[in-house]
Amino acid sequence: MPFLVLLFLFVVPFGQAAVLPDASTHAVYFKGAVARPGQLNVALTRGLPTYRRLVKVTGSNGQYRSTIEVEGYALKDILDRVQVKKEDDGFNEALDTYITVKGRGGEQSLLSYSEAYLANDGGPLLVERARLLFPHHHQPLGNDNSNPTILHNAEERGGLNLQTCSACHTGNPAPVLSVPQGWLLVTSSDDSSRRYIEDVVEINVHQVGIPVKDTRATAKNAVIDVPMLVGPDGKQTPLTAQQYRRLPKSAWQDTTFGLGKGFHGRHTWQGTSLDALLRPLLPPGTDPSKTWVLVTAADGYRSLFSGSEVFAAPEGKSVLLADREDGQALGAGSGRYHIVSRSDFFIDRSVRMVKEIRIGRIQ
Image 1 (tube, rainbow, N blue to C red):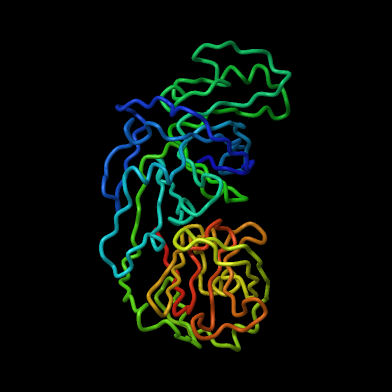
Image 2 (cartoon, one colour):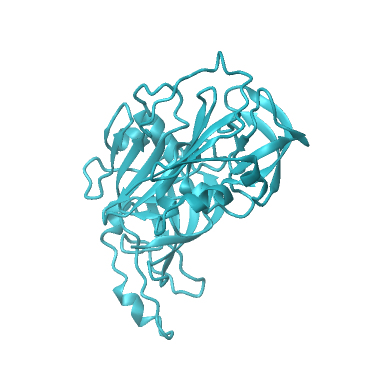
């Protein structure tokens, strides 16, 4: 299947939402922890802003397919219309949920809820319109519906045929051009090709299925000296101070702002990446992009990260397990360790008093 190899982080809000047919051979369905499961339709997208990005597409073997401009909706905006709604698991926020997006061929990508909601560039897009980018020296193709360089919706793209393009391209070997089909999932945070999905058929919001007890009233000053690491196989491993000291260290500085309480000050954290800590727990053959990482605090607060955020983050953006803040060791009220997301615009996934770090995976 095709996948995304590069995104220019070029996001421009547009005006009116694109026209979307109610009956579609490229139907997309919402399921899982949502209040309004069912099919994506005109009502869900009406009035939403659209965003544009440039995308280079290749096949699974790395062969070039096309360069496209896409126009779509922020996934979070559409999820707001279907309303993420959890069953009671002891934690009343959605920061511990994850989203799977499945294509017609069975391929699927995993995103954390927070990748959609805590980003600052629109986050992942559900793309309905796309066009091919041709070089400037190419002859004009006209303005009819068969022109692949004009923005087409999912239905229109299904009828485009690029077989005649081979007559113009005499390189060795000539590229086999194609138009991506159906609704597309496009992410902005990845620097590689893992999570692009073509011809999306299903968007599923998942709960981790692990209840937690809210003890915020009684665990305000807890210090957990030895958090527990839990692998995908359920095996538990204590994180000792000796083990932590052996891991490579890095630092992060940020002006922090949360959706709940606003400005939290400018801080510097020192610690190690979750990648360095958790990768040894992945069984051989595990696809990290099909995993999730749940971090739980002593007071029951918790956040979830996709495996792509933990194990394949762009350089300098990996999740940090910190043991020092502003040059001082953490203590009462912060616990021994503190999770900091270096990719989020908002700080809501920050977890103090870390008690457990658990890896889960999808099939």
